[in-house]
Amino acid sequence: MIARPHRALNDPKRAEDCELAIQLRLMELLSDAFDAGWGKLEVLAAMNRVADQAALKLDARVQVDVASYLKKFSRKS
Image 1: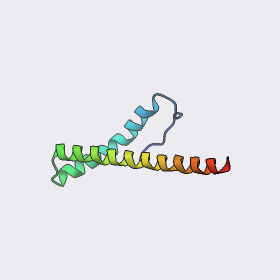
Image 2: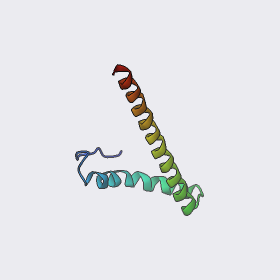
Image 3: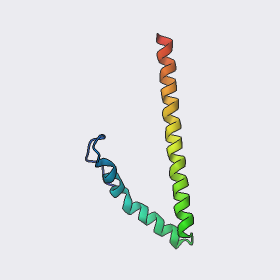
Image 4: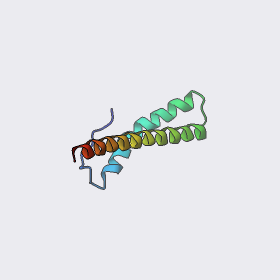
């Protein structure tokens, strides 16, 4: 189980807390991939690509949400 955040969103230590919270699960995932026969560099490269793709998808959703909001807002004006 991953620990819940205990600091405010704007607290500078929150990012560090998040890293610590996900570290164990990440290490378990790495170990499982290595045990399955994947190499360290290819697993780390794949994890980076997956993280980048997830970030891009989240960013795209935010952009769509903002665009939708602005469209609705401009119709009301």
